[in-house]
Image (cartoon, rainbow, N blue to C red; front, side, top):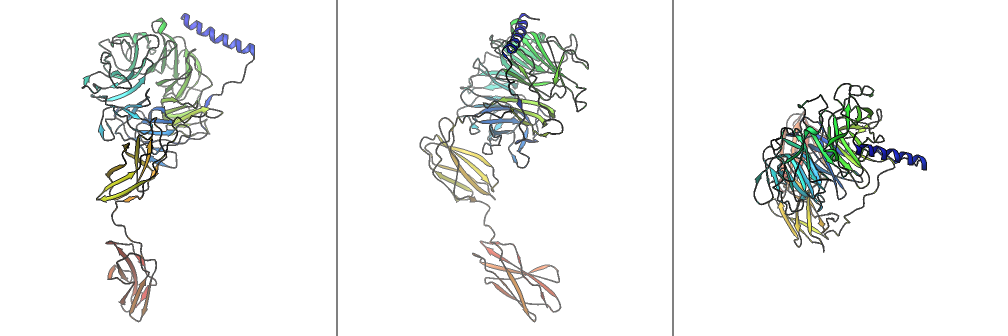
Length: 628
């Protein structure tokens, strides 16, 4: 046992003794599931690299009052309403409500999200296009609108073109890792190998940092005690070092300082076939948390050359109420305050030890409870926090985690239900945990500004629609959104920078096009939207209403059919069927009556239509049927 670990144990013991001496106060309330499931993710939209996981959400981030979730989903739902918003969606951090106005358009799975120091949001994944423009697998957007960040032109692409992790570190660099071969910061493309770092504000890339792992990188984190940067992933060597199988610590020039030899393979002595690690996080305490295959979460000590000082492990649980549930791989690690949260596709037992726990049906270590999809650990003592033990079910388990200013955490992944057995609720791959006393408040950092005073829509020719509005004083832009056929969903159509007052585009033919605008202000706040009047109908001339009433009468074989007039109708058309046979046209008239001759011994049924602007209405049946 290292001296540092002994010190930690002593600190924890002293704290316990001190509490006993002064009298124990009430235990801190633990995070629990919300009383009901609200909005979540639904329908697998397909993925080029994540098809083996049934999870729909892979990343989650908080920004400006929104919780933004990325994955391979197609729709969002609250169980009663389903709305199509593929790959990336925003939810109100306080109410959990889906934000239907936030509608960026991209073409592939989102795997990574990271808030920027200047208020932007970085998005990475399998996509290549954003709002119809080819941009590669990394984009920076304005999280308050979903729009592309103005002036951002750094790109990551080539090879399979996948970004798996984005991390803005305390050293000021934005680290971007995955599987890609080319990057550019606006000064021409250069060859890279699966990992770069850049200035998060300007996008300038540090070309000297070139670690060159030979496979996909899934996690990245910078040391707090040195200039070393840690990589975890599915690579078998880095810069030619065959010892860097899934893990490496690299220098500012990308040279290998530590490789996988520092982490024991807990399957067997000298085993090297397992190398897939999914995430790594370095803490200010000088620890490096690494998780992945072999059901293991390793904690390495920077003070002792990355010796392993603690380990957590998930395994089969014979006492679980659902037999057959197993432990599984750790998939993401995130520090929130003084806790480390680690997600996994684990549904069984959790064990901990200061020594290597062997991966077997009868592993070593101390049993520390059950686990389902996520566990919490103390960032100082490294031990599991026993009070946080939610019960969930699913297949792929947890992936993305984020803490929000109200003290809650959000978890996304392959999670079907939460709650104790017999009282479970649908999770829909997006779960929120808050203090059992209720969530705190999230101060609104973006107060509402004045809305545009008016907006007028016109259709001067063809399918062209022109909007005219005013720019409120102090606004930087007016944002334009459109709703089609009263769908209830508004999509972003563009913005007009001040002092512009018009917007023009081609409308959707064959549909009703309704527009609204809202003002944006310098620190990112928005006004309430106002609707542009009128809605523009590009469906062509609409049929008139059918005549309200039609009556038929006869004197012998002479029949008369009369009907109510329809406002604006230019013509009326009368049809007749005899003895229930085929219906035939009997005449067109500009008046509201028609005379006809009946067939002796037959039954006759009449109907009438109105015509306006060249379009006929539906038919109105005339009563009664007439006998000849």
